[in-house]
Amino acid sequence: MNKLRAAAPLLEQLVPYDPKYLPADAYLSANENAYNPEGALREAIAQAIAKVSLNRYPDPLANGLRERIAQAYDLEKDWVLVGNGGDELLFNLALAWGGPGRAFLNFPPTFSSYEANALLTGTTVIEVPRKADWSIDEEAALAIAASGDVDFIVVTSPNNPTGACAPDSFLRRLLEATDALILVDEAYAEFAEHSLVDWLPEHKNLVILRTFSKAYGLAGVRLGYVLAHPEVITELVKVRQPYSVDSVSQAIGEVIMDHREEFAPRIAQTIAERETMAQALSALAGVTVYPSEANYLLISVPQAAQAWEYLYEQGILVRDFSSAPYLEGHLRVSVGTPEENQRFLKALEEFLDTLPVQEG
View 1 (cartoon, one colour):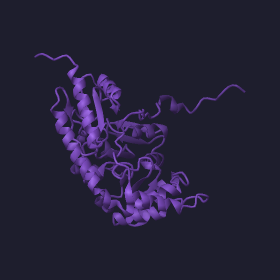
View 2 (cartoon, rainbow, N blue to C red; view 1 turned 45 degrees about the vertical axis):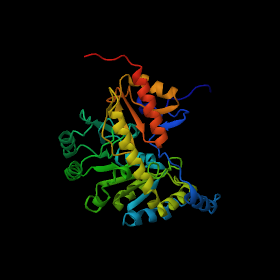
View 3 (cartoon, helix red, strand yellow; view 1 turned 120 degrees about the horizontal axis):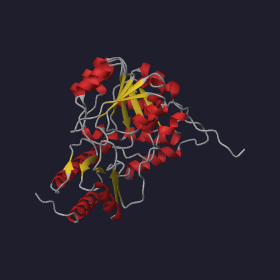
View 4 (tube, rainbow, N blue to C red; view 1 turned 120 degrees about the vertical axis):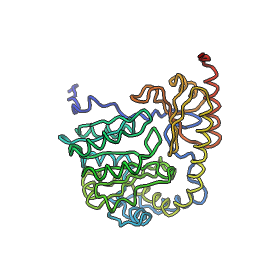
């Protein structure tokens, strides 16, 4: 039969996630770590992989890695769940706490997958747009949370793509205002040097999401984890895919956790480079730089779409948000190596020099 039954109706309103992955010389678009694990660490990873029995299914719950993560945070193993990147865990959250007749509270602009996951699971999305300075409208958020009509909430801290952390005072009020599950996405927390992990014992409705993709330079491996009360972990286990984290990834994650302190110098270097870039960008005419505690900067640029094109013609790929809702006229640039950052700054300055001088 040369006919095809239509896909599920809820897919009609969805646009596939597009990371805008394009070939380039300098990749400054995806908030990746600019540095690949190397040297002795790379050798330790190779040795761990060599011991993996590729003909056997992986440990379904990655218990060896769970134990190492739990020890790092002074928790028990049943407070940890590992996933195929943070993306799987975010989708599992929507599966477990969302669905028809349930609601998700979102704070755009933020990571688009939150809303997409809610829509995929038939969850109602309630939006509280951020203020002009990208801060959360705290009183509006608290009022909706306290109404009891929300089942789960995601707060990104630092927020992607705007860069700032949510205030502790707001997060504490939010946790106390509702029994809704509140996931704080700390994918970039190492660059902020701040975390809510210590709050877990006193807030059963708090979930912390972390990743190996950013500070640990493992975006290509796909490893993430959540820290939460065992009752929450039990529910998430019910919806996760069996064997979602392969044996090779588990082995690599274990090595990274055993050597995690070795990443401190690179994290410090990234933070220093971020501040150097922010200062240089602030000196460019027409450019606005927003405060960031992550490994990227959101900037407002004249003729942002054309700026993105010019940069890409120079081999530099940044993230184009120039036509995205709430983010019109903005670009996001990841912190790269010092050489990549200088190349980006030089190219952007060259583009700005081509624009007509504004009078008045």
